[in-house]
Picture 1: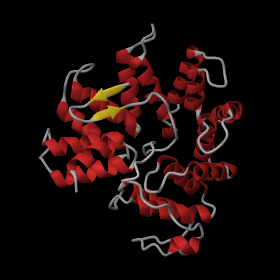
Picture 2: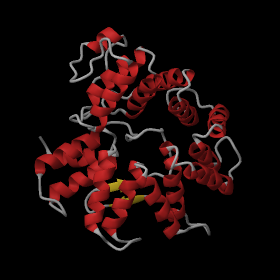
Picture 3: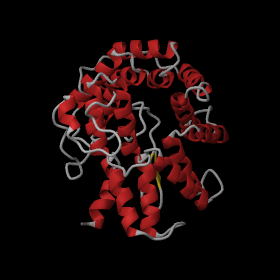
Length: 325
C-alpha cells in the first residue's frame, strides 16, 4: 500500500523486515558510501569521536555513542561514523553492536549494502544471545538474502524467540503469508496481539501494534477495522515505533481516514524522523521544501531528504536527484 503525501510517496509496508529503527532498502549507488574498512578495534579506534572513542572504550559505551550519531541524539546525525563505532564495538564482542551493524549492511545505510556480511553479523550477534540478532538472522533466512533461504529454520528461530517473549510479530507474519507454515490469518493476528500486549513492558514488541494496526486498516477482509487499527498505530507511536508515527502523520495530512490536521501531521512526522524513520524524515523534508505548516527552509529540507535517501527511501532519493547539487 502506498500513500502519496503531496509530492512525496510515503510507503508503509505491513511486513516487518528487521527489528531496528532505521529503514530497510537497497541504496542507489549515487548515495551509498564505502563500507567500513577493517574489523579490529585498532582500525576503528582511529575514527575521531567526541566523548567516547573506540580505543579503550567498552562495547556498551561505543554502541551508545554509535546510536547517538545514528539517531542524532545529542550529536549531528552521521550514519557512517555510527557504522565505524558499531564495527569497533562488535569486534570487542558487543552483540548488540553486531546486530546494529548488520542492519546497516542489510539496508545499505551508511555503508555499501552487503547481505552476506549482514547475515554473518546477525549470526554472530545471535550466538551471543542478542534477540535482535536472532530476529534479523531469521528474517534473512526467510528472504534468502545473503544466505540460502530456509523457511523451516527461520520459523524455528522465531518460534523460540516468541516463546521467550520476543519476535512474535515476525512469527505472525509467517502465518499471515503462509511461509514455512500453513497460512492462518487468525493465528497471525493472535501473535500480533500477543506482541502488542507486551509493548508497555517491552517497547520492541510495539511493532506488533504497528503491524496489527496496518492489517486492520488495510485489510479487504471482514476483519477490517479502521478505528481499531488507528488505535493500534497510536499505541505503537506512543512507544516510539517510528514507522507507526510516520503512517499516522500521513493519515492526518491526507485526511482520508481521520479529520485532516496538518499541524498534528507535522508533529508526528517529526517524532518519526527523530526516531530514525526514513519516510518520516523524507515527508518532513518535503514540508520544509514547500513551506507547508513549517517555515520554508531549503537547507533543512535537503538535509532531511539526503538523510532519508541514505537510510533507504527511494522516494527521497528521487527528490534529491531532482534538486540537483
